[in-house]
Image 1 (cartoon, rainbow, N blue to C red):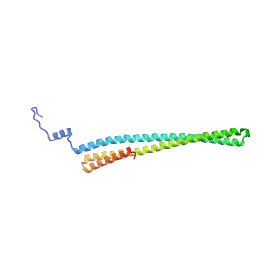
Image 2: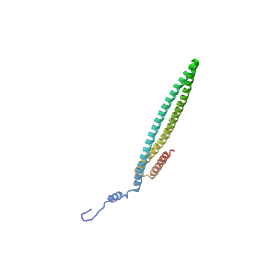
Image 3: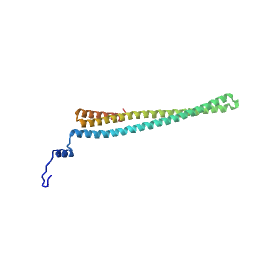
Image 4: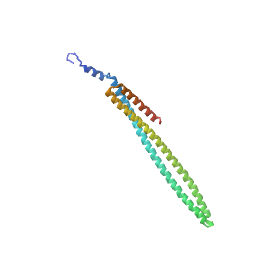
Length: 191
């Protein structure tokens, strides 16, 4: 621009002004917008995949703890069974004056074993429930990971589309992005 208000544009100045005002190449703008959206969605899917993997690990840990507690209860049950067996042997060998004592002890051990067995079975059921919850979370984690991977492929196709300016690559990019979002929806719905 001159000092007197006379203005001369070079051929590239007009294109730069249009690009700065948002009137750039629509193909480039579409691909850039697609990439930004898919990258954001992919980041969310990646976070969800990590969260479900962590939850699966916690549930698996809880399952192991409950299984250990159940094992401890079964060991306690076995100890009571051994004592009951000793009382039954003692009942057979004891003089008649001690038979009532051993009979009461045998009954006491039977009651204690019944309570211990109920507790151990409850702990085993809780362990199984935590295992199932862990498996469900791992399935969901795999879906999130699949969705994230497909979205990463879509982003790679976007880069190829920008470099080659091939329309079929653009369609492949959009299709792959849609597939990745569909797999993410499946993960969110636990499918």
